[in-house]
Image 1 (spheres, helix red, strand yellow):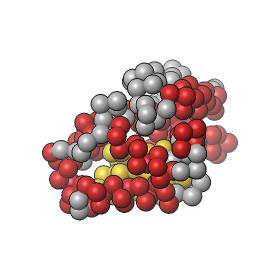
Image 2 (cartoon, protein in one colour):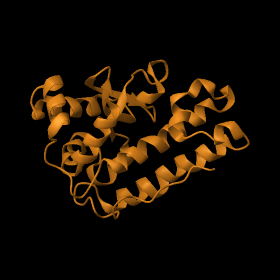
Image 3 (cartoon, protein in one colour):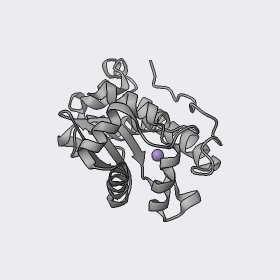
Image 4 (cartoon, helix red, strand yellow):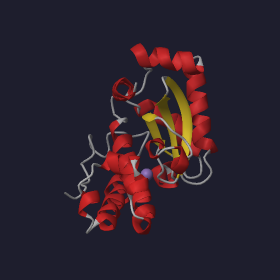
Length: 208
Ligand code: MN
């Protein structure tokens, strides 16, 4: 079965003013859609790969033939990353995490403000396009970043990092340029207002 673009879990204007409506419309309807379409194109005719789940596919890029490994890495990663990103945002987001996640963040990074500063630095420090991640790795939380549409699930040999994503933030210019232009730092600060800590906590519970 072909991979499909799911609708956004909220209206495209729901994250205003932190993420503007036009950015959401283009980001989901064009950028994310292109990753899905190009992933399906790359897999076409390979029944064994077409039958795999998206996550199984990006967790085992070594089993993808050389001729399509690049497109599957870029577009499969793009599809997974964006699907994940929409899910950790919410118009009811913001505030601070609670419970196990709050305790794990405190243990790994100190105060919540310390964590935010380190996460923002990872996003700002990613040269060019990529993602900042909070991952669970060997029982601890870590902040990492990847280039392009790479994902920690792809493993160290491919993405340069490892771990199970708990929180992921898109720092490609297409994620913020219409509203924030070159000010990636302002976008990253604004994003805390729409992070859905319940969704992030659920990711953490699954990742542990
Ligand atoms: Mn994006």
